[in-house]
Image: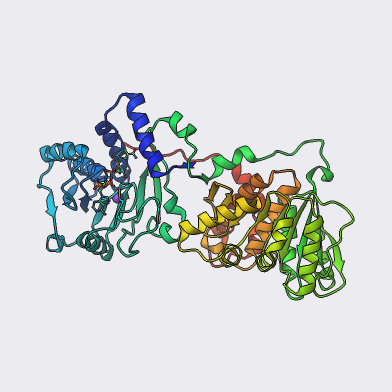
Length: 511
Ligand SMILES: NC(=O)C1=CN([C@@H]2O[C@H](COP(=O)(O)OP(=O)(O)OC[C@H]3O[C@@H](n4cnc5c(N)ncnc54)[C@H](OP(=O)(O)O)[C@@H]3O)[C@@H](O)[C@H]2O)[C@H](O)CC1
Ligand SMILES: [K+]
């Protein structure tokens, strides 16, 4: 699913209004009705007090429509107008008039702290103060109102975007943004929902289709893509009946050092479980018995030490995963340097492999095109330097990717794969996966896909998705805390099967 910029979103509205010959007021009615439907479906007429806070722009206009529909259906509603400006939008005004016809109570005008209502824990708040039109810092009393809402324990539903959150930069004051329980967003998700600094405000997201012009959405380049099942299914390459193990490539996993051989065990198992025809673990001598015992399906090549001092292969691997548990001593750096100079196979570099690149940036010149690098935030910082905020981090990563023609997977709650200007935001995974060895498994999965002939970009995007999906399945079985990296490996098969599962229960139709 595409993610558009604010400007592209506004153009999509315009394209819809023009092509469907509807007014912006009708589009607002359509959008806000979707939010109402969702609420009504869940509440089923429950007489809980609902406080609807409306700004004076179109987000506020949506709020007024929601108030009117709630009133009409007999809900216990109170509407507030947050008067942060005299510049009321035309559609806000039209809906203000329409609300007056049905409202049992006149909307309450808020102009300062003295006007704030008491909010009880069990009440519901609809947050329609600001939408994607927020473009400057909040005036102090509006910031205080947002803190007032946050302080209450009300269940808060934000319309389109949590108020106080910019769609394209981090907040001026992190405490002056609504922490919403559910954000019902129009048509497409916003990039800020998936970045660590801003995703915290939109815990649960519901995307409602408001029928924006399909052609425009398809043609628009977007600023990122949210990767779910629909996006990865077309990437899947089915296996051929008359194939043999040679058809699916030979993965080589290079890494390990005394006390860190487990990383290579996990990655090698993951490559095989992802479908690599053959797998070889290239480890120091001390890892020989461990790998042979733990992964009998794999072949093992050893160097003669506790740490790798030479990486010498007498065949060309279909794919290489390198760096896991490697260590960073001088002889290993030399070995990696020599290897990278001569390597022409598709390659994934992780962990100490990245740390070595960061310390010796000259090595970056020897990377094969579209090398995949999979840093966690600390490793990324070593590679690209400190960033000011999450947007700066993305820009710096884009620059890095362009400069070295490499694919960078920024690991995190929503891992983001960056290739030049393109961002692919992963939508699988869970906090249980923040566990030792989880990254080694990802390296193995991506290597396994590369060995089967997936292009580097597809291997990275699909690999990250599968890794998250396998982790979701593992968490489903054991709970977050008990997930260990081996459970992720064990569920790679289920993650593949899950790709082809149909939903067993159809979506409940909203009334
Ligand atoms: N996307 C869609 O298809 C639809 C979107 N809808 C809803 O519309 C909003 C966007 O509405 P908009 O009116 O453009 O903006 P807001 O409601 O978010 O904000 C209103 C105006 O407030 C001004 N502003 C911005 N920041 C501040 C501030 N810190 N303090 C005071 N005022 C501020 C700004 O106007 P200026 O001219 O003063 O700059 C904003 O325009 C979208 O999010 C949806 O909820 C449609 O209803 C349906 C279709
Ligand atoms: K809002």
